[in-house]
Image 1 (spheres, helix red, strand yellow):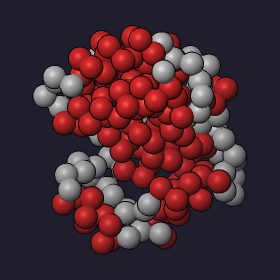
Image 2: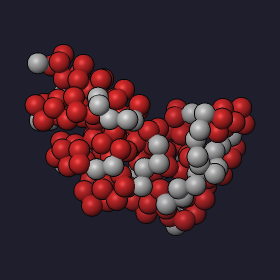
Image 3: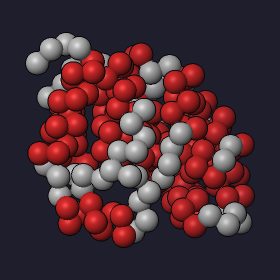
Image 4: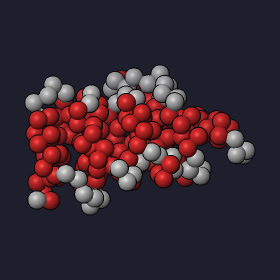
Length: 184
């Protein structure tokens, strides 16, 4: 295979097609996933495809920009080189997150490994519903890996989120409060 980023992204899309699962794709669509293209791959299959490729920011960016395809959004954080994922790119990607699955994966596979992750948690607390959700998911990831966050500010933020009208945010806020209580 060539080292051309576009060709690598094309190969990754072909791998998605080869592993497609219509039943899972239909279930995801029925549950409200708004992506136009869903191949129905699970995270393990996507991670296996990612492992076949060297980290490459150009490939990751091309796949991330394929916002209409669920699996492209999920694999992009798996192949973006952590040391090249700067805060400006992180904020840009976060502003484009379309659902909690994409947020969870971005936090787990990429954001939690960045040097600025703790600061990012606080910065996102003033954002949209999805940005606030991402802030809390990232905080949970950081707690799980033993990294420092501002426990008091995140606890206060999560308590405030309990009164929002977004069920996903309420659920993750409860989880964050539990995790923060365990480390106190």
